[in-house]
Image 1 (cartoon, helix red, strand yellow):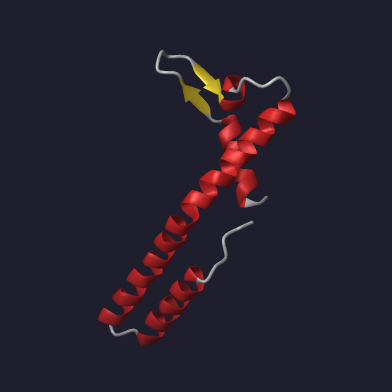
Image 2: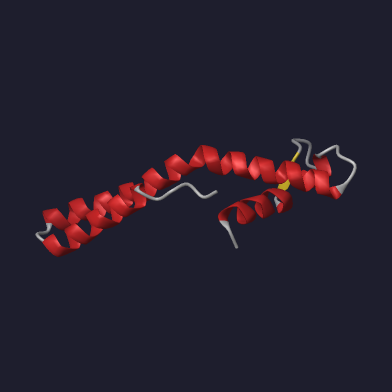
Length: 98
């Protein structure tokens, strides 16, 4: 399953609290006549969320690898540090999913 499908499914199925104790699914709250239109809107929302978050997610993952490289350097494990640095560079080079 693709990332966009996972996010869209979560958006469709996640319960939303209206602040008054009632819970609804996003599809219940959309005022479209027809499930296909609602799915198009949810997919567009999922795409927008991924597009907005992709640089942040990529940098967070690369940051973890950078931290592992720094830790390895401090403990004198050069091969582990080099591997972690290569992982960080590979993560930063990842293309955004289409």
